Figure 1 (cartoon, one colour):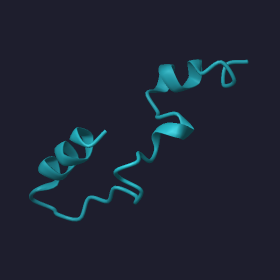
Figure 2 (figure 1 turned 180 degrees about the vertical axis):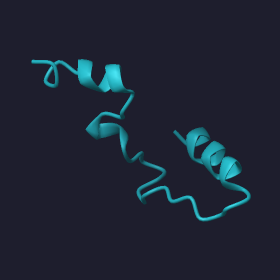
Figure 3 (figure 1 turned 90 degrees about the vertical axis):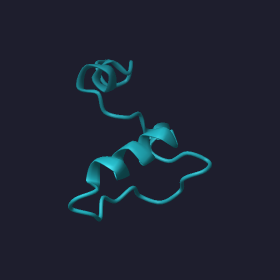
Figure 4 (figure 1 turned 120 degrees about the vertical axis):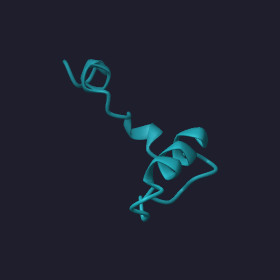
Length: 48
């Protein structure tokens, strides 16, 4: 019941299965830079 109602996603802050990939971004978001990782995370979150 906890998982089927979506409360687990809200409680733990994990994305729902339909939120992993958007229409504009179909690949897995990988952080590749050591020094510009925050910029990459910001870029990924802006595209959501």
